Length: 331
Image (cartoon, rainbow, N blue to C red):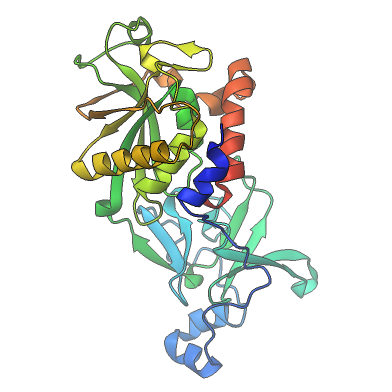
């Protein structure tokens, strides 16, 4: 199969260039910064100051949206990365992208710490510590005065329903994709309002294992999601993926509108015309009707069972392929 090398030509190369040694994009004279910022914000952002603990307006803030740099508006963190660290300052376990924040060694006050600054304007944000309680192990300790908040615009959210074999695999990969808010395993294509995993596995229900991918269209496009989809599964095998055989493992896209349908058709036609795969693409397109969520034990299966033999042998290689091919699209 010659698919992976070709995809980078067909869809374009999305490179996330490190800004580590590049100058910041927003460079203003100090007099302009003083006019633009309040004295308190100037002290923190431009003079590397620190606000008093438990004084910041974002310490207990819980709205859905994005935390941006108060100096330039650069998006820094998503609200779902925020947690209560009981340290007195807003804390986050992950930055919004690898290129949003810079780190550098801070040797002030007789300590050696990791300072974090806005990659866009160089404004001081706070410090990064390796004592976070989540799986990232990180705690971005940030001054509220360094931040502004951009509420989530629900109109930016869209959903793509994808079937590419076992939903454990597809869900696990899309959970790692930048801009994806939620990936839910479920069943689509059948008529019943409820169905069980055992019934779907019989192959007689017309239900297909799918993943509902809810994403922010301002951060990632439907085209990029389809690019990932066609990379992490084999769209040339009918009703099977590897050793998973049955109608429920069909390669399928359930489109919610004409725009999604046309884009999916165009992708398949382009890949077919250019003979990206050695065999015909058998991915089927269906109008989306309804989703029956899979049982709770199927949700986040890889995260719950990382040492499971199937997870190691089948899911992990797909995650590795995604990370290698789409490093810039990883959360």
